[in-house]
Length: 418
Image (cartoon, rainbow, N blue to C red; front, side):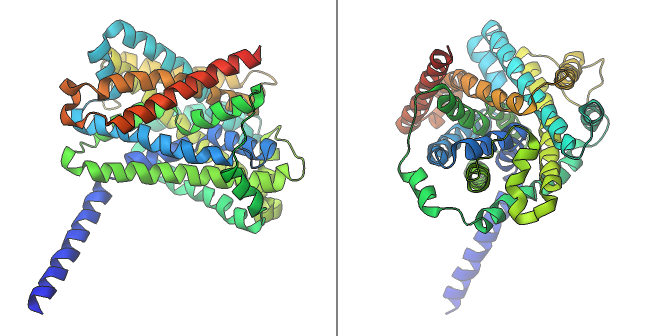
């Protein structure tokens, strides 16, 4: 009896210890996924449901699996090497190739930053605030947030405000969707090889497995100084984050399909997208959607330029960090400020279509993704770098299949576009 009590006590202590370790390690995977639910993500998932109904529901299952695989590789490289992805690429392939890759990443993330400020403009235009007021104020706020204030403290506020996505889950059950059609969307995938369908598939992959996420996640793990003995907790953090983002994506698509698609409403503006939440909040749907889109846009507009500046400076061997002065890290502050400035200025162009801007930025993400993954595969299979933590055959096969599929879709997109 005493031995049994001691065994139970030791088991309980072990479980508590493991929970405490997990709570200490968790963050990078879950935060990365939350940032991924940005203006481009909300827009893409909304368009998928509103314009195609349940036709793309099936895609969320392979995308979720692919996201876990890709994020796990980034986490593993960070834990094993203690270095960021850009740093490893420079060491493995040299400065010249790294420069061109980082240039492509800069241009892609500029498109994403433009999408975030487009999200700010779209959100506040719902409540009749002109983009010529909202976007400059947002740009100043984002710049000051990182340069002058404690970003880590404000980050927690953004994450709490992300509870907005729960509204889609509640609405998903309220609208009483055709569950038979939903099940059919999962079990009977239909792929059409025309421009609009291929573009949406590439956008869904690009918005859920964005190239910048791999750099950001790995850097966050390195910054948190997670050791190899705690790797399984870091992997769990990645898995939880990957499931979270896809659950949110499912309910956004579900709600838009059951409300907008069912009534033949196409999304031309943020106000149209907000109508999907009317079953839950009725006359307040526009305000709730505006709040959620604004929060997501500001959060990502803070993260994207910052992470891009870190990645480029890391890859080129420049000084970086918000703890340094402008004189100590001119490249870092210059890149960060340039991204915010260009992102905000482009959105101020008269009659710039905000929804297409947010959507097409995600297509660009999908096109760049296989390029990043090729570099990742070369590094993670190098035993000099990873030791015994190189990829298994399953990981290499799955990653290779994803790369070939995305290259095929990108080429098909170009061909059907012409």
